[in-house]
Length: 549
Image (cartoon, rainbow, N blue to C red):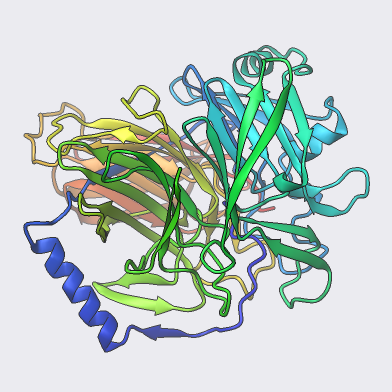
């Protein structure tokens, strides 16, 4: 979810000290030992879906392979001016259905719905959870239509996914597919909603009412929940009610928001939830580095583990290897206090946008080990993005994917969509609204076999279909393709009538996946074409050029 209400005091960047280097060395030694956790091999494949716009900090559900996207923001990182931050123009006021296989989209405005429902459906940073075919939405920060003020909504709304998705696709009325109740305990944003057994867990987050103000001026009130609130949902299909259970409360360890709460299988085989990192520490405006374990019996801070990467909400994927009793969690980009620079761990207390893809593994003895994977996000992106599970995969009741490291097949784990895409790591203190956008890039996420496999001969010069992204683009863009052998490549950008706008020649690109950056090129047209020429042939891609918001 979006790193909302980011107020920072320190602005400096330092290299890690000797003690941290020693810690890094010891971790590397542990990775090389016989107790080394499996290092997962992951591939990202960007795909373009026409008419799918950028979106960040949204909620989602799915039915029969089609997604419903709800709420979130159409712009990038919130601006610094109180009147401009989280303005109404950036609200997503449509319900969007996406079929990632056929690459079709449908949408419908929420204006026909009662105000009490549609104001929450256009909010950002809602907590959400899908149980069977019902999508539950809790809280979220947005504009109250009654008062025209910005508040955290104290509501739980239930959506019937099969009926609602069908109505949106066929252009029918969407009335009657929403049920809603109000309770002040639901006034939460920046937290998470999970489930263990028949109990729902509303973990962390805060209540924020009023206008964001980076200087801390009294234009808002903010209160962290400092809690894991628990409840049971009594639902007869027509109406529902809430039975609140005793919460877990801790003003130190549970004082966190905009973090990653991930379903887990614990070493004893029982389901649990891990609250990874988040902000802010009670005494300093920096992320937590340790995590908190939550289960049906209570919660346990794990201060022995220090997470260096991926501190804000970003796409996460939980996978459990039952043969080796190892719980793996993958993290994709986002924002972090640490990043890797040419093999050196760098600490930046500005907490920048990062490209890091990392893996945290819990061994059978409960020890957590963090590894940075050798691949990265293509851009500074991931904050406020979501992972959408491929439900064809075998999984546990809590959504953890069943995985064993000797699997020889490539698995489509699911998709990553949206989030904030920034043009530089640290834009918080200079942000005027043009330094970042809501990304419309969609990635297939594949888990590759752990052992090398023979590469089959391919008839095409491209092992993968070439892709240009982001597409539509309001500025810089990238072209990605895979060559079967090292060779020269010429890339041209042309108008629809064949006028050459830009050209770049590469004497020798390596075999394998190539990702090339291109500057913003104004064509004066809404559509341009990217042509990739090699000695074996050529491919042409369509690029939609949109104006910057």
